[in-house]
Length: 199
Image (cartoon, rainbow, N blue to C red; front, side, top):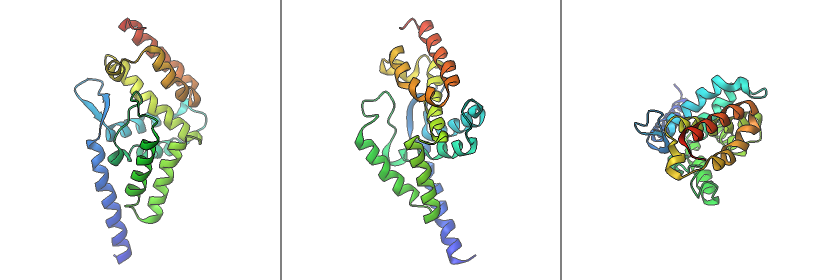
């Protein structure tokens, strides 16, 4: 093994070791069985499975590209933490700045070319301009929505979120990338609020 390849492997392993920290970042979303909160690594894995299973409901996307975007999208939470959709700081410029710094540090652990590719994937997800990134954003909204309908309202109940707020916060993002998934999701939302007697 040459010195350059051993250095490359050392940097790749350092990055992979760093990713273990994502398992300790707790999200606000509960597991469906409500036994505990999910962590960001579990969320990323679950979303990747959503992509493999549901990509037929998007307009001509490369499912494996969507999986790549979803696997890297929350890595920045190792440094920047999780910022739930219902929190006041969800779109804060400071959060975006912190996430940008985190992306540069964490992906910078990798060999230069590989780190640049990962950083570009993360930026593609954030920009939500390619069909794959638009659909990745769909799934990032759909997964917690589904969990909330199956866990007594989950984060909606915790944050006093109304049905109208759910439709406004999730609807445009999901409908943009998959009208058919939004049709299914909005029915789940309506059924949940009807059963819960909260309008």
